Each structure stands twice: as C-alpha cells, then as structure tokens.
Length: 311
Image (tube, rainbow, N blue to C red):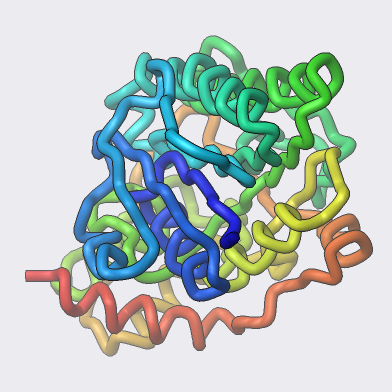
C-alpha cells in the first residue's frame, strides 16, 4: 500500500511543491485548501496523478475516509500583506486549524508535521537564531496575528505530542522563494520581481540594511521531507544561513533582469525584523540537510516563472 499524505494549504506556494514532490516519491496525496490565498492553478497539473483535492476550511472538522500516514499542516496566510488584511482568519487557522489537523493525525495514528516559521523569533535579540531561542515578539502589534498564531500552533503541537503521544514535527521555515509565488505576495522576492519586470521603481522599506536569508523551494521541500521521515520531535530550522541585506537582493534582481528600475525607499513597517538568519546546526546534524541551490541559480528559475505572469 502506498503511504497516504494529507496536506492542508495544498494549493499554496509551498504546499503545492510539497504535494508534487511527494507524488514524485510515490506517495498518495490528498490536498485540502479553502483557496483564501491558495490557487488551484498551482495544483492543476497534479490531477492526473495519485492526487485528490478537497476544498475545505480546516478551521472546521476535517473528515478523510480511509487510512492516513502523514498530516502536513501548511494552511495559513503567510505574507505580511495577507495577515494584515486577514488577521482573524490567520489567527483562526493557526489555532482552530492546527487543532483540527492534529485531531485528524491523532484519530488516524498519523505522523504530524506543522509549518512553523522564523517569525516565532520575532525581531530577534539573538543572531543567528537557534531553535532554543524563545523569541522577541510583540503580541499586540500588527504582525502579532501571524507570529503568535504560529507560536500557539507550536505549543498545541507539543501538547498533542506529550499528552496524546502523537508523533509530531515542527519545521521553522525561513524566507523561501521560487515558482508559484504570487505577484502580489508582498514578500521581498516576488515584490521586487513583479516591479523590475515592469520596469517600475523597486520599493525597499527602511534603508534596506535589514537582512534576510533566502532558500530555494526545492531545498526547503527536501528539508521538510527529511524531517517528516526523521525521529525528531523538537523544532528544526530549515533555511539558508547565507545572510544578505534587502537592498542587496533588490540590486541582484535588477541586475539579473536587465531592468531599468531604480530603488526607492519607504518607511519601515511596524515590528519589521532587522535580522534573520538561521542556525542550521540541528538540520545538518539530525537530518543531513543543508541548502544546495545557489541564489543566482534559484533566481533564474524564479524570474522565468514571473516573466510568464507579468502582463
């Protein structure tokens, strides 16, 4: 019998790549998404494979017929634009959605993997960020709806592990880029690409000195699946330890596209993290994982995708 995987948020950027890769590895995949920020175009090429799709809001009870081996909970708005426009759905999917997805895993005796985020570290006072760092988060700021939803989701995941014995995994995802990101996503790479490919001014917030680390989607998915198959229950950072400034990534994209765009500066949003870089010692040691795709290589593939989307 092929292993069956349920992926919530399957029509999203990362969820769709997870579904595709697991199908390539001979799993049966059941995708769930309410399409609030997901897009069926991301999974339309999977329907002639061992893939089924259920349109459903996972903050409500999740029913799946038959056995389930893995539940991967990826449902959530995940960009600043999304969670500022959808603050309550973001909180609900982090709390109620995680509860329902854990309930499914418990009922089926399935292994559970949750998409957490580097945002649980907030605007970090520790650099680089280790999994043992508890974070510096403003719970009542505009970003708190996402940060605290994920922090709560981690707490509930560990409660199900400790109290109910569910085999749970927590992946803390750092900035990831690649095909299937939305043009209006609001995160750095898609925002810059959609602007440069239209020869518009590139908007950098603050002075551009804030740092991020960028992981290509195939590297991230490889890390997630390694964690899914591991014996590890504590959180694991999956991200690229190569740190660069927001201004540098904007300049790189302008150069690679040959765009005539110029950088313009806007005020920094409230509670925007000044630094972001993962310590991936745990991923290297426990999973044998580290990123392989160089930034320029990943950007070439991502630019090709965005060229097909920019009108």
